[in-house]
Figure 1 (cartoon, rainbow, N blue to C red):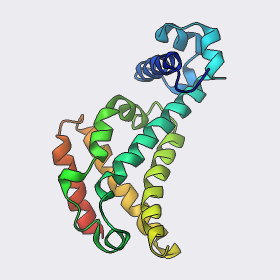
Figure 2: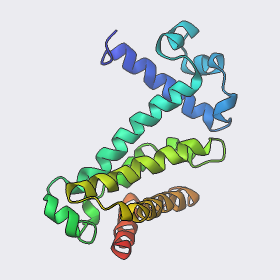
Figure 3: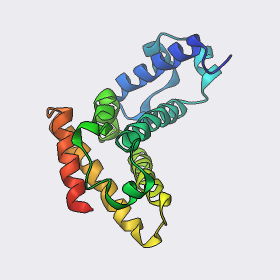
Figure 4: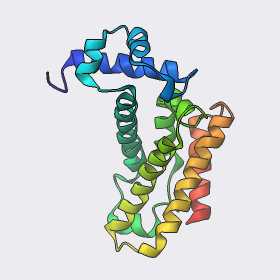
Length: 190
């Protein structure tokens, strides 16, 4: 079966949704394949055709979310030259072009889970590394400075901190408000 087969896409989407639903009430380590199959309305054979264990589903879904996160992160910089990106992109960022909080809102249920106490911190660090790698990629357009690795970590935690605070406020602020908070934060940090 091809990866772009509509049946595969629908099956995986059902499995992701089922996992997300179960994770609201139960830690990942406690979820059984049979429970996930019941929730997704699939049989065990279908599950094992695609995955070996429940953790594999979470990892695959996480990777899908991270790809979307990276695209959202890069959206404001599509029309900026390398020189501008290195020298002033963060300071001159227009909140209307920021897409990262649109991404978080799109995957709100997922973020509620990875920022909850029911999931291993392993996934938090995977999230951290995904955001941090974008800062590092931006720096590689120019000359990468190893001494700035702590700056990239600091900036990454600033973004994650905004997302965590938004989560603590039950995602009540609008995406536009969050974009403004991010731009203001980046101006202070850069």
